Length: 82
Image 1 (cartoon, one colour):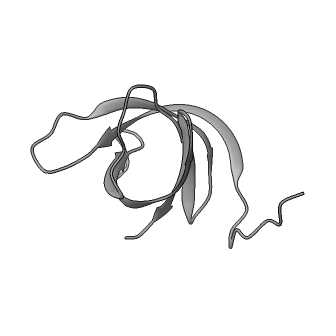
Image 2 (image 1 turned 180 degrees about the vertical axis):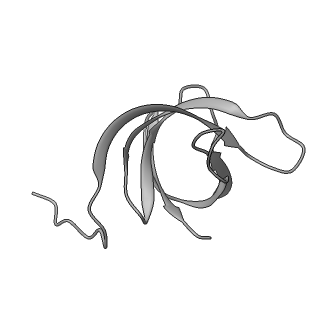
């Protein structure tokens, strides 16, 4: 088994969100499958996710700056850096 290296506990969820990959680019749809105070696990098809990006969790929250932590197929983990 893999050791859990997370600093904060993740909560499962199934929320639609948006990824913005640079200033002036259009946000793209994604699915958040779990979230913590330190980051998220995301499913996003047909996206070439850069090392740093912005995730928009909902219209009611501020966008969060993220750093790509890992990627396997269409799933990836991101650390909040803001």
